[in-house]
Image (cartoon, rainbow, N blue to C red; front, side):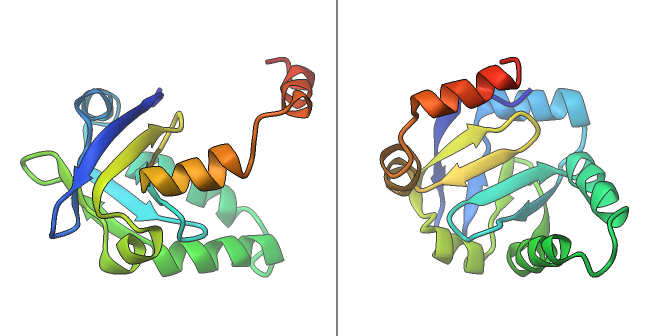
Length: 148
Protein backbone atom coordinates (compact mmCIF):
# COMPACT_ATOMS: atom_id res chain seq x y z
CA UNK A 1 0.00 0.00 0.00
CA UNK A 2 1.01 3.59 -0.59
CA UNK A 3 1.02 5.41 2.75
CA UNK A 4 2.58 8.40 4.42
CA UNK A 5 3.89 11.63 2.97
CA UNK A 6 7.24 12.74 1.65
CA UNK A 7 8.61 16.07 0.52
CA UNK A 8 9.61 16.22 -3.13
CA UNK A 9 10.58 18.77 -5.75
CA UNK A 10 9.07 19.71 -9.07
CA UNK A 11 11.75 20.79 -11.53
CA UNK A 12 11.39 23.67 -14.00
CA UNK A 13 10.15 21.27 -16.70
CA UNK A 14 7.27 20.00 -14.53
CA UNK A 15 8.87 16.70 -13.61
CA UNK A 16 8.39 15.17 -10.18
CA UNK A 17 10.88 12.73 -8.73
CA UNK A 18 8.74 10.06 -7.07
CA UNK A 19 9.98 9.56 -3.49
CA UNK A 20 12.15 6.44 -3.16
CA UNK A 21 9.85 4.46 -0.83
CA UNK A 22 6.87 5.02 -3.14
CA UNK A 23 8.97 4.24 -6.22
CA UNK A 24 10.16 0.96 -4.68
CA UNK A 25 6.62 -0.12 -3.87
CA UNK A 26 5.31 0.87 -7.31
CA UNK A 27 8.11 -1.06 -9.04
CA UNK A 28 7.52 -4.17 -6.92
CA UNK A 29 3.73 -4.18 -7.14
CA UNK A 30 3.10 -2.90 -10.66
CA UNK A 31 6.39 -3.40 -12.48
CA UNK A 32 5.42 -0.68 -14.92
CA UNK A 33 6.29 2.94 -15.39
CA UNK A 34 2.87 3.89 -16.83
CA UNK A 35 0.56 6.21 -14.93
CA UNK A 36 -2.57 8.28 -15.41
CA UNK A 37 -2.05 11.73 -13.89
CA UNK A 38 -5.22 13.70 -13.25
CA UNK A 39 -7.33 15.64 -10.76
CA UNK A 40 -10.99 16.02 -9.93
CA UNK A 41 -10.79 19.67 -8.87
CA UNK A 42 -7.41 21.12 -9.82
CA UNK A 43 -6.26 21.40 -6.19
CA UNK A 44 -3.74 18.57 -6.46
CA UNK A 45 -2.47 15.98 -8.91
CA UNK A 46 -3.51 12.34 -8.54
CA UNK A 47 -1.01 9.81 -9.88
CA UNK A 48 -2.61 6.42 -10.55
CA UNK A 49 -0.60 3.35 -11.57
CA UNK A 50 -2.25 2.40 -14.86
CA UNK A 51 -3.55 -0.90 -13.44
CA UNK A 52 -5.38 0.97 -10.67
CA UNK A 53 -6.75 3.52 -13.12
CA UNK A 54 -7.98 0.77 -15.46
CA UNK A 55 -9.75 -0.93 -12.53
CA UNK A 56 -11.52 2.35 -11.80
CA UNK A 57 -12.42 2.73 -15.49
CA UNK A 58 -13.90 -0.79 -15.50
CA UNK A 59 -16.14 0.15 -12.58
CA UNK A 60 -17.19 3.34 -14.37
CA UNK A 61 -17.89 1.44 -17.60
CA UNK A 62 -20.52 -0.64 -15.81
CA UNK A 63 -22.55 2.50 -14.97
CA UNK A 64 -25.12 3.94 -17.39
CA UNK A 65 -23.51 6.20 -20.00
CA UNK A 66 -25.53 9.25 -19.03
CA UNK A 67 -25.29 8.85 -15.25
CA UNK A 68 -24.74 12.46 -14.08
CA UNK A 69 -22.13 11.60 -11.43
CA UNK A 70 -20.18 9.49 -13.91
CA UNK A 71 -20.25 12.26 -16.53
CA UNK A 72 -19.17 14.91 -14.02
CA UNK A 73 -16.29 12.75 -12.78
CA UNK A 74 -15.15 11.87 -16.32
CA UNK A 75 -15.42 15.50 -17.44
CA UNK A 76 -12.94 16.48 -14.76
CA UNK A 77 -10.49 13.59 -14.88
CA UNK A 78 -10.31 13.87 -18.68
CA UNK A 79 -9.87 17.65 -18.57
CA UNK A 80 -6.95 17.39 -16.14
CA UNK A 81 -5.71 13.93 -17.17
CA UNK A 82 -2.85 12.64 -19.24
CA UNK A 83 -1.03 9.35 -19.59
CA UNK A 84 2.56 9.62 -18.35
CA UNK A 85 5.53 7.32 -17.88
CA UNK A 86 8.47 7.67 -15.54
CA UNK A 87 11.81 8.45 -17.09
CA UNK A 88 15.11 6.68 -16.32
CA UNK A 89 15.58 8.85 -13.20
CA UNK A 90 12.17 7.93 -11.78
CA UNK A 91 10.57 11.28 -12.63
CA UNK A 92 7.06 11.75 -13.91
CA UNK A 93 5.77 14.79 -15.80
CA UNK A 94 2.73 16.70 -14.62
CA UNK A 95 1.38 18.75 -17.49
CA UNK A 96 1.25 22.53 -17.42
CA UNK A 97 -2.52 22.98 -16.96
CA UNK A 98 -2.60 20.83 -13.81
CA UNK A 99 0.70 22.20 -12.45
CA UNK A 100 -0.59 25.76 -12.77
CA UNK A 101 -4.03 25.15 -11.23
CA UNK A 102 -2.63 23.08 -8.35
CA UNK A 103 0.30 25.48 -7.79
CA UNK A 104 2.79 22.64 -8.13
CA UNK A 105 6.20 24.18 -8.40
CA UNK A 106 9.32 23.84 -6.36
CA UNK A 107 8.74 22.08 -3.06
CA UNK A 108 5.68 19.82 -2.97
CA UNK A 109 4.41 16.99 -0.77
CA UNK A 110 3.57 13.53 -2.11
CA UNK A 111 0.94 11.61 -0.15
CA UNK A 112 0.18 7.89 -0.38
CA UNK A 113 -3.55 7.14 -0.66
CA UNK A 114 -3.35 3.33 -0.60
CA UNK A 115 -3.60 2.74 -4.39
CA UNK A 116 -2.58 6.12 -5.81
CA UNK A 117 -0.48 9.19 -4.96
CA UNK A 118 -1.53 12.78 -4.50
CA UNK A 119 0.88 15.65 -5.13
CA UNK A 120 0.12 18.86 -3.26
CA UNK A 121 1.54 22.30 -2.80
CA UNK A 122 2.30 21.85 0.93
CA UNK A 123 0.85 25.19 2.02
CA UNK A 124 -2.35 24.63 0.00
CA UNK A 125 -2.81 21.19 1.63
CA UNK A 126 -2.39 22.65 5.09
CA UNK A 127 -4.94 25.42 4.38
CA UNK A 128 -7.58 23.42 2.50
CA UNK A 129 -7.39 20.11 4.30
CA UNK A 130 -5.95 20.53 7.78
CA UNK A 131 -7.20 23.99 8.73
CA UNK A 132 -10.46 24.20 6.73
CA UNK A 133 -11.49 20.62 7.53
CA UNK A 134 -10.42 19.83 11.11
CA UNK A 135 -10.76 16.24 12.27
CA UNK A 136 -13.75 15.98 14.61
CA UNK A 137 -15.46 13.54 16.96
CA UNK A 138 -18.03 13.02 14.19
CA UNK A 139 -15.22 11.82 11.90
CA UNK A 140 -14.12 9.30 14.53
CA UNK A 141 -17.73 8.15 14.92
CA UNK A 142 -18.16 7.71 11.15
CA UNK A 143 -15.05 5.51 11.02
CA UNK A 144 -16.21 3.52 14.03
CA UNK A 145 -19.46 2.75 12.17
CA UNK A 146 -17.33 1.39 9.34
CA UNK A 147 -15.47 -0.83 11.80
CA UNK A 148 -12.21 1.13 11.77
